[in-house]
Length: 437
Ligand code: C2E
Ligand code: CA
Ligand code: CA
Image (cartoon, rainbow, N blue to C red):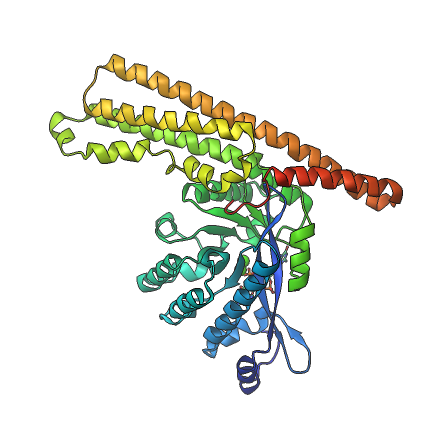
């Protein structure tokens, strides 16, 4: 701790709520637009000095004052969400919580009341909890996390990559987002091992239905690399330092960085390939089963599981975050191919249980392959259509930057109008916000 803490002074600071918050934007790598922010606490002491959280949060934990601080942070986030709701489309605000917040029901009860009395869209409130906290948590604390998620708030695992969470723990906890720690992100460009950790974490998060946020992005190359890897959001000094709330609103409305969803679309193709592999494995498993064993299977349930095209990873994306692309032909064309594919898959499973001839199974497998190929073609078409718009926008965007730097004022205003027009086109095509990656 770099400053000498005074117990009485600090306790007074907590009672008097001598804290302010700055906000660091999270940028969607698919669209380049601000899609969320993290509220970071500062202690504004009576003499006007601003003190950073690393100097007082550990002390607050030690003094048993952290719960009060968490309530101040949550009240603040709710207030700002309310302001945003009145003035613009709200973006989620994240608050950091600690182990002590999860030791009893205080936070849970507080949040439930707050959500109810403010008629709050709870998903706009995000709680960040570090990976280190999770691994040392007993079952009871993990259950509380599940109850918090059930109240509708979004839960993120923070500083991921520092604590060695097991897959078992990760898959059993209700996280919606995984925040890659800046120590891993920082080494991404120079260290092959860290690059692999990042790309496999992004893939793993998708498979567990989570979006990813890369922290500590300090340069353009790192941002672009993560974008190509299919990371959902970026946060870091290169995008924006933590700023005052008014500035956050301005950045949210006016700023845009480069965005490109091709990394994400590549991951979606992998989702689909994974699903196809699962179904073929299921069929060969069923074919090998004895008649006796087959009698024990709930065939209807199994068939339902494979026929529902809205519940696979691709379907969840399509009917959720993917809707921002609904103006594109490639996107709308995917729907029929995707649902037909699931029908063929379910049919295959049914046939394998009913012991149809191998020839009939082969025919149905060929149909499955054909539909699978069609789906991939639509996905690639969608990628090309979006790439075209994105490149057009990014090109104008760089030209505008260049002209701004060159001070060519007359030309600049012309180009501004033009690039704003392209931006409007893109936004009206609805590539505006990514609700969840
Ligand atoms: P964190 O949750 O990992 O928050 C990110 C920290 O990294 C912030 O520091 C942010 O300013 C900094 N950062 C962001 N981008 C970059 C970058 O590109 N490079 C570098 N070097 N740093 C970057 P900050 O605000 O000093 O917060 C430090 C920690 O204090 C946070 O780490 C969080 O654990 C804790 N904290 C902040 N606000 C709260 C709060 O309201 N409650 C609790 N319990 N903890 C808080
Ligand atoms: Ca955090
Ligand atoms: Ca962090």
